[in-house]
Length: 116
Ligand code: FES
Image (cartoon, rainbow, N blue to C red; front, side):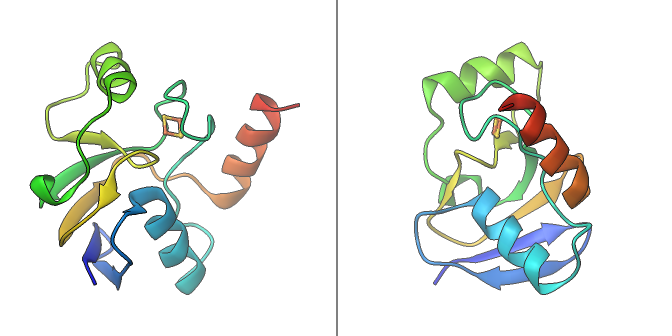
């Protein structure tokens, strides 16, 4: 199975092919503590940008970028090494950097605001 490593935490796990980076991050969060999360608020609709990560290694091992993901990243003026974790799916070994970690409580609050 492909291996995903999250930096700067150096946390690594194996995931089934096709797992999203966001799902992998949530699994790691369960393994360590609740203060390691990739932010998420729009549930993959490419509206929030909170889940953006930096791809350090293995960009080719991720699913291709969708048009709406590309549009969001352009809108955010994100660099070419950025992907949205809600959309990027893992098909090989990757190393990603957490750009803006959010505490579990913050993410829950965000979700509640987005979906009252
Ligand atoms: S969860 Fe909002 S863009 Fe990924």
